[in-house]
View (tube, rainbow, N blue to C red):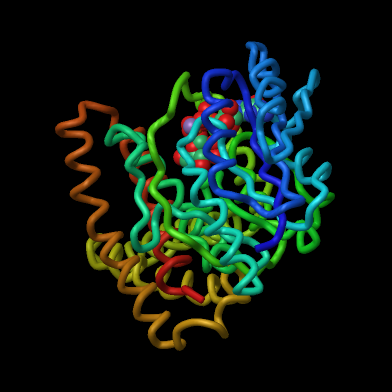
Length: 355
Ligand code: GDD
Ligand code: MN
């Protein structure tokens, strides 16, 4: 096994430090390994780290930042820049990531020629046990689905881009290209360049002590990060969808002017737009993915079929919204269009154009 730098970002984790260092020592890391805390705390975490460095067999080092730029992600990047070994393992400081997995990630990294070994909650045997509550799981799983749809190529082999537990080969990573912000540093690393990713399942446990630092602000940072990483594909998809909606209305108006019944006009207009959108999509949104995945007619049937069903279902949904949700029909229509757009995008990126 290679020597490794275990990078641990900490923000007020005083009661977790000793236990984490003790369990890391018990995994018998190779000589030359180091535990590196990158600390932004305002409590007595630094004292706990200094204390641990007194008794730990594996050397313990701390970078304490008075100007904590980039938060959790910035701390990880700073740790990567200061590491002395080629391989690094990044993990949380609250023991939700089992230290016993560190040698497993390292062995896999050495044995497979991977650049990054991801500890995933979503491959065989992995689990999200420590993530309490239906809503948090829904948010977590939903954001993973959307994120993977936005980066179908780069995240092809990564089932858990939101994990904070992974090993990486520093020499494979273009650190200067990273723009760390918020909590999701792995996504930043994987989205910026093509890397060889291998996964190992793990069970995301419960916090040992203290409280989570995740909050709504981190949620907004995450959305900003997504926008910064990939404005391209999704906005092209949105523009084509918008153009399609205008064309749809124009055709409908034209047919009605020629005396056609409005229902037939609506069906024909939708059909023409859905097929037209498919070709525009092929050319301008998913051009780079066409060669790798499914054949032309499969893509055609998938896209046209899905959009037809979606268009047909949107009407009763709108009706139900207004009827039972007691909101104005315009707002209800705006919500259905937005939701339909996201679902349509996810379906196209993950199914129709799956690489
Ligand atoms: N240096 C530094 N600076 N560390 C931070 C900061 C910061 O601003 N904010 C949080 N941390 C540290 C915490 O001290 C902890 O060690 C780790 O980052 C994760 O933070 P938690 O507060 O435990 O967040 P969480 O458990 O809700 O979020 C984690 O969830 C994901 C899985 O759902 C994220 O850390 C991900 O890394 C993790 O995989
Ligand atoms: Mn945590």
